[in-house]
Length: 267
Image (cartoon, rainbow, N blue to C red; front, side, top):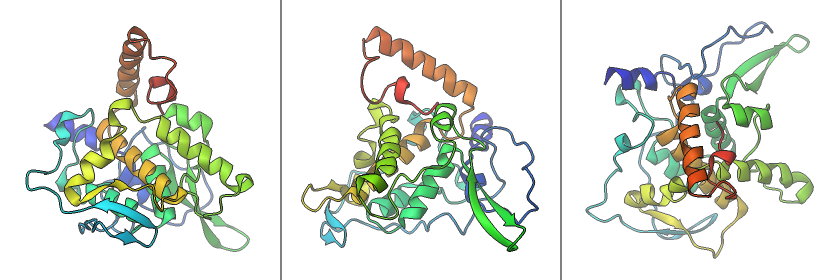
């Protein structure tokens, strides 16, 4: 139990979501990979109040929902590769209730981006502009997973906050969201529907589906995958697991699969 708690305390989510005090423009002190702040940020972690999907069409499209069955409860998180969240650390910033708010559009596009960035390992800092004496928020790749950092040294928009879908504007967003989605292991591709079913959400209908809705579901599913398999796990252990998966993929002749393999992973 103690080892599991120590692993949890290496989670970068809370460290990234807690804004730093306005500093002089100097480089931050070195921090261990996947280090974690001592307390969660109340300002950035969305409320734990549990919304429920109603089954009616909301303002952004048609939701497939309804009341959860009496036998449906939370999935046992201890069966996955990352240690479950410890309630002693406060509210989980990517709890099931938060994921539901993402797919119901009850959290802004920028907030969804920031949850993804923090999980990937980007760290929010406030830099001081010496000319205007104003602070500017920047996300630095301090703890970003190795392969993702190589492709995205700057935190990418994975939702499309402008909601303008002309290719010249949306192409980078589409590519980043696709890369995030491909990195989810095959056995976690349907995790979001299974997990949120108890809260009444069963997915979207095709009628009324928008790019924003699709990307929100993809981001939420990736956050769920991160929560269950990556969060708080030391990078060397993740590399060891990646190598084991790669060998299984070779044995199963799946190395050329377009999604869900170690080739597309963030580690």
